[in-house]
Image (cartoon, rainbow, N blue to C red; front, side, top):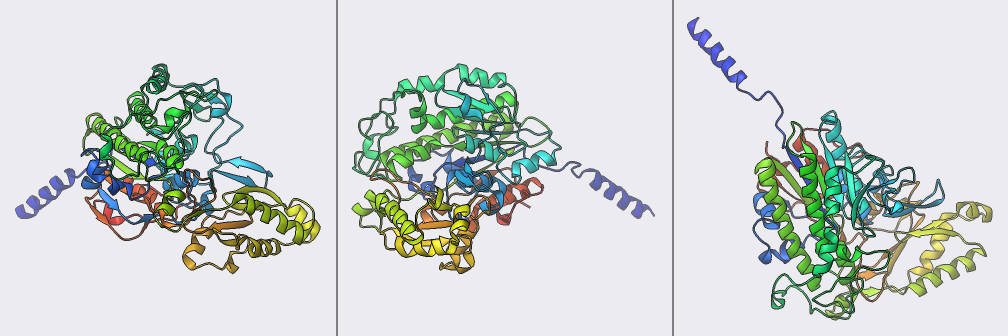
Length: 541
């Protein structure tokens, strides 16, 4: 009996020593770098400091073969997919813009005419909200799981980069008004900016950085991962005479501070606003896990102009690395080292500038826009008579006038077949698809699934034009993205901090796996449109 009593006492003692609350990090920080190709993690690795990208990779878990699972890789869908674990076919964000077949007008992904601007006299800049997003985000699910006790904040120079990650239930999202230099929001979230945001705006930091210009961080001869500073295929910064260092910065009429966001100072003001939000909202100090979603937009602005092989982009990432190191050091002191979780990804990659590719004997080219438009127009008029059959073009898609089709007794298939026969002869056009009947699409299974994951019945076009790998529907300088090819689909997915294992995997993972991995870490339900799966080996048991 005595032995049994001791055993019961030991059992009771053990049971009372178990945690009575579920362990979670004090804070999650989600970081998206706009237009960050996967290879940027390693291309400049030797010049990164220990506390930024290297810290994430060396202390955390790195999914080194991470891809988008849909074809049209652009900013709005990218941010939506990272945070919903979904794809455009389900979450509804099929592009930055699309033609809405129900309302019969063009739509911007986060536009909302029912709300008003907060924080600026520029009335149009704040008429935004997440209402066009059709599913919940991991940030929404965390709000629900905490019965809305936690705080969720989204911050980005781009409105869509702040709004879509923060979700429907966010306490706030803030984006940048390049006309006034203020961080703004909308009445969807609040009726007035909090005092901490007003205080940051009052510092007029964009004006200060405008005065500083942009000089190289390191001596010029150390930029060995980039082409010469002045090449024919690079575009110019706003107001610059040539794309060369050093840059003197000057605002343009009606857009006084836009040029700041096209330099690494854009990353600086984003980091500063993020730290101001953490302090002002006391994030990471409560009983429930808070969530800060940050998107760094500047690499996209620089990348579109000069491409991924430019001195400007190398300097941008070296400076961004140091911004990250400062942010993580701040979080170590504010929240506590090991008490917060960070993940990093990107909304899309980017293709090499065609001029650079051609100079280095790589397959590439520019599609002749005049020839493309003339071929479409002539083919439709010759095949189907007078009348404008196309009501809109977005995302290399053609939206057809279905009322006119019915009037002329023409089918989408007939239009698609006629255009395919004509357009496929144009250099740089790989194929033309009838998006209303993908069962007959002449594509390999891999690409077919990517395009299927993009199609939303109410928001996608009727006919899709596909470019050849390396080809661009653009001008002689700069570059873009938005294709199903590896340079656009492969982006980072790195996690570090609370609950994250140290290691890496080369197995193929999807961007849609990011949100369910974070949800699993937090022991919450994934978003309502989730199609991804947790990366189990990334998480501690």
